[in-house]
Length: 366
Image (cartoon, rainbow, N blue to C red; front, side, top):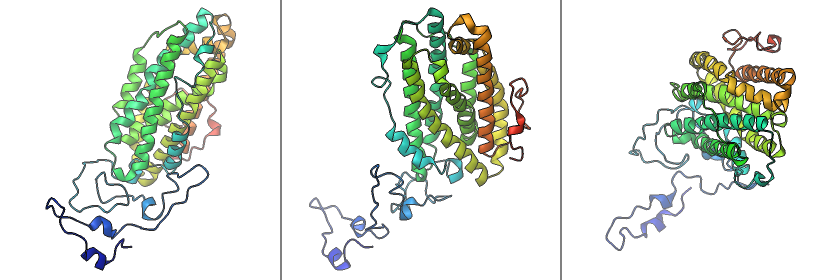
């Protein structure tokens, strides 16, 4: 729909007062869907509301590799930005737009939204255990900041909602590192031990060959583990302050895992051969993760928190910690299954030793 008539266009000036030529192509609106009006819903004007007409069409293979907004008229000689992730299945998830809106609506502050002045003095063994857990969490949360940042600029801007969601993930994870660092210091304890196992896990994620491999390692394995720890916050947290930290952090991690699971599923649907490269990454990742998850500092700290102190660590703490490990690895295998990956027949994880019931899984997957 043209914005001005041809007759009006002929009467427009051709030169600026400084003698520069004018181009009125933008005023004619030759290709724009002029007059299409999105309708705001109860939450306001969301990204779902404006995904109408051509503006909502996310192509499998966009013709340009530019930063031009999807739906804009693009010059044929627009410079190529050199993106390497140019197919929809490489980055997309059908839930990503809704997850972006949720992320924006549920941002919270590690400074204002945690009742720091209500922290109570804890017995030394419990405070030490909480500080050790917070040390590990402060360390590993930042990988979910670095990893999206590594790949975002390589993604075609046509898939801007996926990039916008990953930007919220970066902010979420920075906030998690913030809140756990603050908790380690706020009650007079401090940051304790960082072990090689943590660094090996983080490096394996960051050095993944492709974004899809990286997403599988991060979202299915790494963040899935963190999500399950946060879900046990009611049992792990010694006071209501830590419970609120775990609860708020959990809602963020749930979004990240939901995106990653759906992305992997769609990546495999778009190119079934991708499953092999994901399996290859997870073969290595599981072994590194098992070493990380069973390192004495982390497992014993969790056991102390679950037992409410060292007094009952043998009769309560270690059995509960073992149950938590079973839940974590069972949840991981279930996420893989939802993503279209059958890891049951391929994994080298000691499933029997972990107490995992194999009968609950469908072994007919990829």
